Image (cartoon, rainbow, N blue to C red; front, side, top):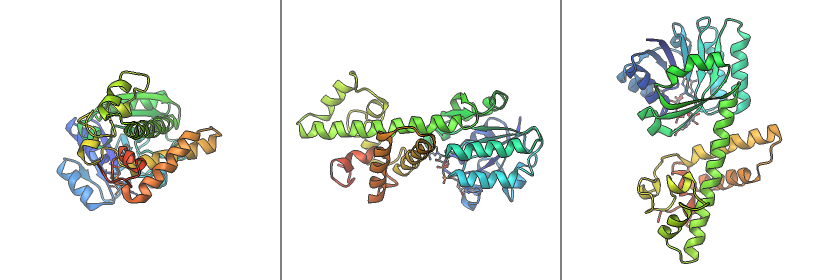
Length: 299
Ligand code: NAD
């Protein structure tokens, strides 16, 4: 059993922390939202009065927060209270620069602290079912210590490289996802205009060179893949607001690093329009309706 502190008990952090309790760990949590704290208490966590109080006895500290500014603010609050030689793991999706800054803040303490950026893919379903994929950045020693704990919340844990590499992998992957979803959606819209049935296009493309996850697992039109959100009124799944967040992070990183990502930029713009039309809470595959010119009304 390990003493673990968990700060940020929202849609993702709540069920992730609950899975650590189920695995037999002693988990102390904190969240600004009283409702999240109540749910976490019901899931078997102890709730502290502040983030700093939550970490005092922890060997491992996990944060799962909305954005880089929240992570840097919470890490600033907790670092004076963490035990020497403890391991800090940030599982939030944040910008690479803030992730590297968080690692540096931990290192500057000169108290033997280890740190890891370990964002996830798999959404709320993956958080509840402990089937997340973790992509981690940081020293090997930090990864080796984190791996058994992360494995209780996910099915795959990949060490991507040094500080910030986990966040880099996450935004590169999600940039592929945003672009590929738009590509698949455009193909269905064009196919419709050309009199092609959804099933015919699916049967061909899913076994041809157009095959990809956005088509075969998450098909944006109802019918061919019964489990995709298209068959459920485009309820998320993965909300368009989160896709836009990740595409913006990819564009920030592209600008900062000088990478050329014209399709990533176009995807960010299209998802900004889709979100701006009131579809932040829809599944991101709903962009097919927006491209069809129906302003996102599900067919
Ligand atoms: P959420 O808004 O449900 O949860 C965030 C929690 O952080 C909230 O409960 C909020 O009260 C808490 N919080 C904010 N500031 C705090 C502070 N200073 N101290 C303590 N608690 C604080 O968000 P979520 O869906 O759980 O996402 C968390 C992270 O995971 C985000 O970075 C998101 O991009 C990433 N992510 C989400 C999904 C998803 O499908 N929801 C998938 C992959 C990654």
